[in-house]
Image (cartoon, rainbow, N blue to C red):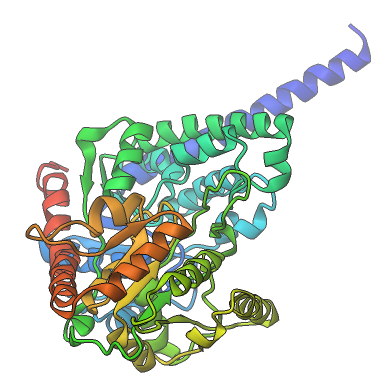
Length: 507
């Protein structure tokens, strides 16, 4: 045997030994973690300062757990190094009004960059998902609890937690991938998650279909590892049931909506002129728009007033403009409604509420103002930028209707908040608003659902034409409907869902 062959054999043996040693270390780490599990629940929430509905769920969940099982320690896994037990307790109270029974423990994570979207310019979904595995490994090596609770949608961490012997619980706001996303790529629709270049190319579309199908298959495997999956809406539940295939382990628990401050606003509204409010959140990765060829509308998520409340309690003004590209649909529908209104009916105003953080946001706002001029409705449109929370409440209190035009909004907290404020909702006829929120209450209509520009325009006209007594009756029914999404309801449903996991565990 020649000298080069011996080199190859030696290199192979050396690599095999290194791999074996690495595997041995991994196995020993897992065994050590399983042996030293703490009587605690580790809550995987890498970003504890996002200020939105997800963080409200986090703190309400912590409070519910502490109330249900006072002897169980709550540990927060976070990448925010300024977070401490006392600061997080104060944050929960100051920003969300949630008073924890005792401060949670904190485990700081140094590898959070591996779940940040900026780390993965391409193949973002699968990159972040595999990055979450690395981050969860760090978390569980530092502290191994009896229960692992994911509140941020990192399903690829569940097999890791199971490996460490944890009971896995999750609260899923929306699936990382949905069946709708796959069908839209197959149909070559240009959407927020399927840019026009891919939509126009059959080869690229086929490749992305394969990519989505592969990811969907992996997502179904890791998701099925959870012992309990709580979901925030019927839409999310239907998708998770199909994707994960564990319907017996899924419970619907509506998110906690703090509407107490809005419920006290008067139902009587001034109709001189009637005002329609739009509160939306802009996220580059979740933008919505109308696709010219097919008329499909894209999606994005809106945390609505809850995010305003959380952020404004901290800084009193916003630092960025919450502007959705679904706003053009709203303005176009409003323009159509203005033209169709009978002359004897009052001309309404639409109020778009948000704030600006930089020149790009200012440019988007200016483009929206230009569109209003182009549609010849600029005299009937108001833009409210960088508003104080008190001003936001005033705007909601004066609105006869609230418009929300996102497709496939998994829940729709802002729609609930419109209803609580006495503003009749005009929401997109899909997902959360259609399946859970804008439903009859005691046999009475609670709002309007629409899809196209024409349907939104007709809904606007209907609200304006309603006799005062009928409008008040609908607003009262909507407010009553909104009360079913309260924090108290969340506490009751959450504790009912986790109770069997806590009480049936013998460890």
